[in-house]
Image (tube, rainbow over all chains, first blue to last red):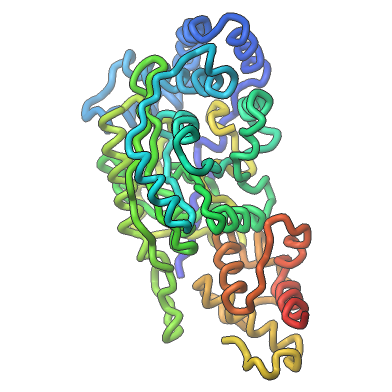
Length: 351
Length: 97
């Protein structure tokens, strides 16, 4: 069996946004409102674009693929600026929606309602595309059950701490990824219980953490690694899978798009009959990973400034298209690509 | 894989260990042979290096094979999953109840 790992990805090696800076920004937003915060984003974004060479180059490589041509400085700035806006909006979505009205249109909510009604739990696959928070809030109103996001918590993310202060329901809506050195048992059982209770589990399936099992698939024209965890979770539990993205269209305007993905992924139990082990234990997941990458590529082309992975996701593209798993004993428990022990949220985006 | 229901409590501990080892290898598609798993070594992290989805698959298999439900809020989880030996002991004790 080939179980290999991804090495420490670039995004995990980066530093989170400064605690003090975020606190100051939050205070200014509370005092002077969304418009003032939005105005501040111009100089803040400019500072980030100028200072963050690695992020700028990653943005350039990504936009070249998404736009189909090399981007200019203005387009790279717009990419950073869009990301900054989703963070600002996230703060206001949590803190005081009345202070900053949002226009959030939802399409496909009936698919979610239908899947929930089946009673087997639902896996909602998202991406670092637009704002998952917009999706969570929009579906919160009409959805039969709340969405629990799988993400990192704990003392690291200044933004997450802020959101939890502003919105006590936020903590309950999160299934925590194991802290460094954690074993993932609590995560595994929480996932199982949420799904068994008919709940919705939200996972971002476009970012790989160190030590994670991955599969490469074509993403915007070149192979990129995707985490296998979300797809293995679907296969293990038999829960229906949907895609969900909260796309930012304009200032305070979002389109939440939900579409069916697969009714059920059959369990990956190749090799247990005759005792033969398959060369690639998760080969059965390939079509699903491939289609996820295709749909993500589609939405990245439609909304190029919405995808927020400011590191080079194609950096390991010399790998063949096989699935890889962490070599023992180096494996670590992680799932949605949202962290590892040396992980720093990319500018605190994941909390 | 499970032993006949008539003699479940008669099985000596190491037999159950071997049985759980076979379950782990089968369910998780491990390269290891069941007898190669060190009963005292950690299942997660440094030992077998299992991850959270492995834990989920294992919990589902244990529920299926032995009818034992593991709860996320059980403080003993870490100890239960500490090693093959600990897991087999937990299954043995739960079955005996």
